[in-house]
Length: 62
Image (cartoon, rainbow, N blue to C red; front, side, top):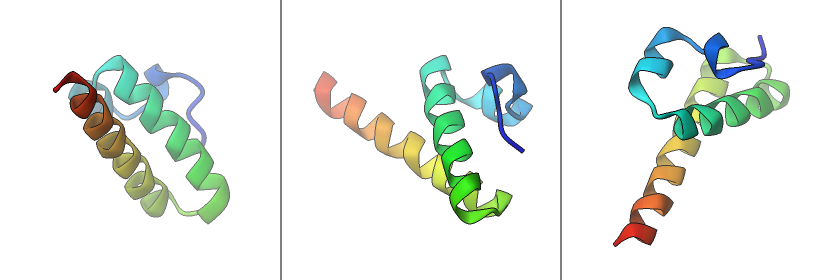
């Protein structure tokens, strides 16, 4: 299942992440679901992408 908008994301993701992090999650998830074909793996990839994005954002702010 691909997510076309952030409103399509699971409530847990929408409640936990900023709009920008949701964009990162959605893009990474959609790419990973094509690559792996497995929702669990796609979720892991997407969470990793959000963590990497957050780390980069934090390093720029410091």
